[in-house]
Length: 291
Image (cartoon, rainbow, N blue to C red; front, side):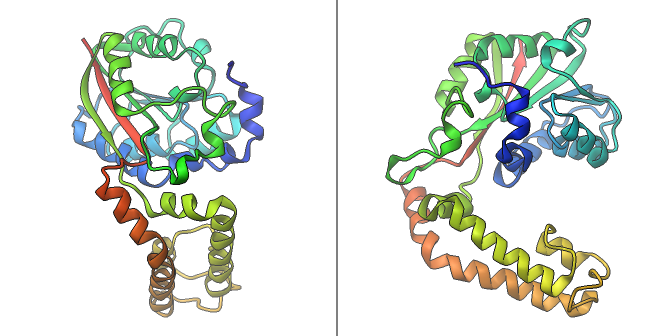
């Protein structure tokens, strides 16, 4: 099956929300990248950069030679704002390739491989962008993640995902293309994944909506911010009941604790059983070197 193309992704709410670039997978990617210890003058390219979370992390860690491409103008605007970088372009990989062979020390593509109708051709193109000894960094949803009653999520079928990858399959695929493994690991198994497996995305969205409403009531225009960001910020929005930092700290902490405690009896037994059975996390991160 063919990739549905940029216009389809631009209209799909799941990708507009950039849901796949947050949480456990993003934490794992960031940690793996920083542990690589690349020289600060390394040339980095993020393919399918989205809103620029990875580029912002790299720039914040002192990497100034960072580039990104994405086919969405809206995402490119966000990426520039979030990272403070200018070298982020609206382009497909095919448009970006000419004249750039061997131009980068690390090329990343997060949650992109599973959307490719010809994954080997895609990786070969990325490989061609790398200098000798350069690193290819990928992340994909982990096909070995626990699935309640064996049912996969709607986004794990075409036209969303055209391929599925577990650690063994990904390793064999990349090794077969002449790449040498540096890192291959899975993310943690987040409670949200187990919760969604039990109750479905609709109920999860309803709970998040309730949390947002409480945050709007107590903290003003801060519904989209995390509780940690709310506590760390200065004054709340003018509409908020609790306007000052000291007044907000205790309610914010209590709200976090309340929702964690509310969900704990539901997801903890299942999470423990998944972990005891050796089930893996929801995302895989791979770093492979050009031989």
